[in-house]
Length: 317
Image (cartoon, helix red, strand yellow):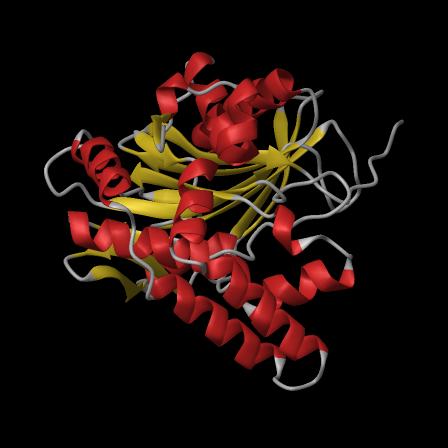
């Protein structure tokens, strides 16, 4: 099987789809709102690489880089080309098309990675692989799945693995294909405060539009700290929020916010409380502090991703 519906995934499926996708399946069972989607399994990545003889190119260019014949950037470009020039086998493509079309006619989707080395407790590969937003159409989905696979071999990703002595031949990547949402506000929640490591404090970052601007750090978001014990917001600060990303006919576009939006908070007290409540429920499910990406559409809270907070030192008081 090359594609699985997210609703059917459990944590046991992390051996075939990665923890990011498996966690989303668990959230469905928890009755948390998650955008509809499917996951392209490790099997698809492995078969694509095998059928197109890509492993020999990977080893060739890594060896040439190691021996000083080519730079890391040149190594990466050559490996990525081998992915983009590769062909997805017909039987695999048919299964992917079938699952994608089940999301709706020409559904607009986000395409992101779920690799086996992402979100390890001792290291974080999060953010190293590419995410593609508002993609639609059979051909485009296939092409961007390949681009997502190829992003495993960016200079940054290769360098990170080399410095930590991770074996390149052990890498596997699943790919999430999820329906796009158009949130009024979105952002990131840490269910323990990473600024002081206190478990009773939840840190919320929010801004207008799609969450990419907050997750990638290209804007200054609003910040809220919610105290679980006292059940109130103990700190909040407005970010600049100069612009937002929104869905458009050509993908996503950057829209500059009005002065009123910049000088207003993107979330009210009630929605901060509702969001914290959902995120602490998720933390309880997984048994450890979570780094959660979210969006609010017409008052409905959607969770796009939940992963353990990595490289943390939590205050045990």
